[in-house]
Image (cartoon, rainbow, N blue to C red; front, top):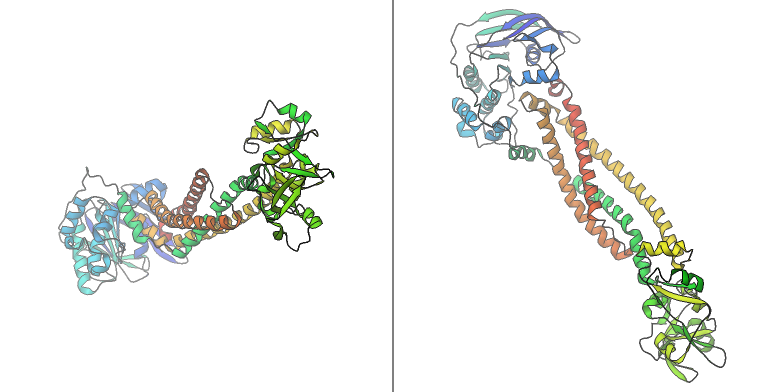
Length: 592
């Protein structure tokens, strides 16, 4: 039973004027009146949708206005609402539309037989008539065995024949325990209702009684049926509503790829730079004095690279080349022409020596020429330019080269060790294994205040890394900020245009939590497309960057996973904010 006492609704004018009436169980009431007479407003108040009124609305003795949100939502779960439009989900079949509301196939089958639509279950709303759609909406309103059924102009969009058919179906809705209230301005329900209430500009001007019996269909809901909506059905709904914007998803995927590639570039920049230096330069070869050598000789793993040279009668030297892997000559940029000796009888000369001793236009002309030093004959394999950026390292990378100023010719270590003499000038050249790959070795050397030649180069790399890191972080943060603002606005706009859908779903007994889950799943599906696109872009960016600047832009699995989890969480938050804001609104605000 519903009882209203002194019910008044005013906005800029009076919509309902001090109404008092009692709606008894087992009856069908018809609210009749012209448009604007207050029919829909009264239904919304009785349904617990509109709470902005004065007076009392008592349901089984409980005042609707005094109910908290949870109690009012529980009350609305006992309400079945039928609109002039069927409001069926166009992307779901008839059976799925009904199962989406309640997963009770046995109950649905009973109602579809009563209302004569059992043959339509596998069709879609667009494939059946308006009258058939309204019958389905009637079934939907009954699935939770409502105590109160409200119908707002249920035949307004139907032709006369279908209107009469739908009106007759309302007799089948009545039970001894429910209240049915129908708002209409037509006459199709006059023979259905047990009471006809005439409204005129917010006042009840007449109540007419019909003396006839109702054919009741006492169908009880199955108590032992698990009516939990399956994940499969939720996904069907999401799929029916999913309208992925491919261009937008690709753009977001590109932004994600930039974030991942930027993180990969930063995390790998130093190691890549070190690997490049290690590949181009003999970073494990250092020159130290005797005292420093004594302080570390028992603490690190090393190999002594003794230096030999051959002196002629003129005071000139035939210098020694360290083995290629231990020499700056491993870097091909030092060569003006030719390359590192490939046999014992080959030597390398400096460009300065060549210019002082040969009349040539191009160093390449000297390759293969013979050169004599003392009683030995050699073939020139390469000409090095010690004045170039890389060539400077040749004379400063260790003390032996810097003390061999009179040398312009260099033979391999294997030859000089046979024909020359060891140089003892207080300088010791070591090859320290794993020098820059083992941080403990670096700590030992630096704790002894031993100057490492390549530290300066690596410090410059660190400085470059800091500058690049700052620039990349600024770009990433800017891109992320713009992207998140854009994505957030897109979701908010989508929620604005779908607010009615959210409102109607609540009236159809879809819980707020379920609505949240549905919208989160829908947007996560969009995010999944962006993730797939981002994988493609990450590979393309890696291929491009690695080809042109030899840097790895793919971070570790941990970093990639962390980025995706962060973005996933943020997307969920971006969805939850507008959906929660929407769900906090009164249903009446959403369905207007």
